[in-house]
Image (cartoon, rainbow, N blue to C red; front, side, top):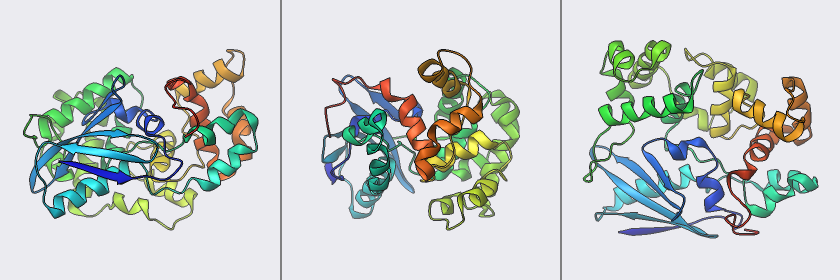
Length: 300
């Protein structure tokens, strides 16, 4: 079964698929030779389905191995639109970068849509798994969660675990099986709060709180610091913060400071001109070379 989903005129499938490290964490998998993104989509209470997603300048095509009913098809479409940010209005952002020659490529190539998970819960768990560790360890932790707690598709892949499944195991599991270290109690508590309904992380997508207030609310989750909060804010559509970590600091030093370490204040000043879009302009600048000019497909 194949579902075609229309996208906006300024959509760039490749730039979106490769925009953010999530493409490298299960239940995502990107084949950047065929430019196919695989994703396991949860259809609870039914068995999840493996979807293969390809795209072009106007749409994405989602293929699944079995025939889906109306409700399941609607869930696949909703998740795909959400993951690829097809309903995000990028007009203001593109207008802001067009005024600066060195950033004009962003609008011309259709960059700026950051791949995200179907749920804020998954984005938050993965963000917690990126803090104070290597990417290799992040990958191992996420793979362990999906492998042990995710529902299985017909081809044996795992979906991302639900809050209920993560809440059902004890802290020892997170320490010994996931190797989450100091994050173990944080993951356990987060899952319990979300599963019980005492914390509604999905509401952050539509929150009318000012960004600083929403930032404080997110940082109320144990284990979430300023970097984690600003990273998650980007995934819910708030781009004020830069989400500075060791990788982007080193990348900025290499690209714009002659290889010398730059202060966080200097980095912030460099993107202040973009206002509410400063964090997105910064991220696009730091990741520009993730796709070469030939692969970028020209002016999308």
